[in-house]
Amino acid sequence: VPPEFPIVEIDRTRIAQVIGNLLENAIQHTPESGEVRVVAEVIGPTARVTVTDTGEGIPPEDLPYVFERFYRVDASRSRTTGGVGLGLTIARKLVEAHGGAIRAESTPGKGSRFIFELPLAQPASTQREKRG
Image (cartoon, rainbow, N blue to C red):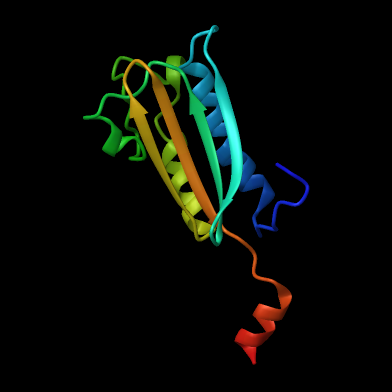
């Protein structure tokens, strides 16, 4: 993140949990020769964080459900081999609690991209004007 990146008011622990979950999933589903990338950028009034991997990807029929409780793309995975299926659900709830949104895009065989956006903090002068 560049030093001039605007301020985003967040609960650092919770957003670190979101990024940690997305990174853990990306690493778990990407082969050793693959790549995992995290990019933060400003898009209009939001900060966008994108976690992209070159892993196996998610089948199109599973993509709409990846943020649902207990949902696993690979139904053969168990708690010991892949968690309980709550990580992305929790990530979505935490991002939404910050006034943001999260989504997933994927191409089977090429990888996945998880994107979340959070509102930028308003400058103090704008906050005062709204209260006035």
